[in-house]
Image (cartoon, rainbow, N blue to C red):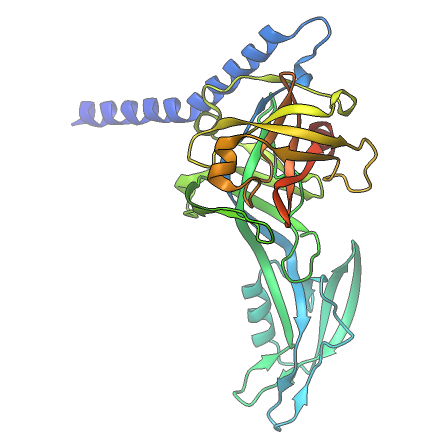
Amino acid sequence: MKKYWYRRILIMALVFFVSVGGSYLLIEQKKDAMRREVSAQTSEEDLVIPGGMPVGIYMKTKGVMVLDTQKIKGEDGSEYEPALHIVKAGDYITGFNGKDINTKNELVEAVSSFSEQKAKLDICRKGETIHVKMDMIQCEDGTKKLGIWVRDNAQGLGTITYLDSDSHFGALGHGIHDIDTGELLNISDGTLYLTSVKEIQKGVNGTPGGMEGIIVYNNYNVLGKIKKNTEAGIFGTIDRVDVLFANQTPVQLAKKEEVEEGPAIIRCAVDGEIKEYDILITQVNLWSGEVNKSMTIEVTDPSLLDETGGIIQGMSGSPILQNGKLIGAVTHVFINNPTKGYGIFAESMINESE
């Protein structure tokens, strides 16, 4: 019996080593491949592994984001709007009467258990913390309400742009904004998940297409962590490098001054397999006022045009390569012409990730 348990523990230990150590070995192999390609003019930091694979995205806001205020009917039958002119859309509620607030449920519980008339809220507004007081409204059903619509997370699908030699990734090429307020989401953290594209909605003039994927939000499908959400993309670390980047080859990272008008390729997996498609860079703007609109691109590949109509939602982050180097990523589609869109310089993404 002791031998049986000893063997079982040994087997479990070996399985753990293979599953956890496998990613480490793959990362080291990728680093070795990068080092072998380093020349006198190229440092290891100049090399990345291009992406092109879709991922599921889940991000939690830093505090609870205010979407709007609303009127509430009090127990006396009158309507009140206690939060009007006190909180604004885009504010983040980070505290309630001295208690930290991170989720909607925490806010609801804090409000429900509060017995006084006036509540004190800690608000983060455009990076500055302010403290406000507002009345609590006793409703006809006996509950208390603030009259505020809130959100505490965002979910979606996007494309990985690159992985560096330290397992740091960049994706999307643009930030994730709240769908109601248009504000860039201020996040506490987030998670990348495995996903599979189930359906493609082809883009036509006036109506952008999109990818529809299946994302199962459980620990088994976790790929990595999201740490930053910026106008240049989302950034973090990949834990399961072997799942996303097996058999991928490192390439050199181009400076933005190297990007030129003319032929290029994008990498994406609209049919479940990463493929390269021909595009044309029609304009390069080294000093664009919007970091994620630094180049204008046009899809010319017949097979991609036939399958998607051009650029579709979910392709944001698809790597753009030119002359064998990673130069940028797809970021936007022109609504009135889905064959065209914008891109961001890879150098801008790398700089923002630091």
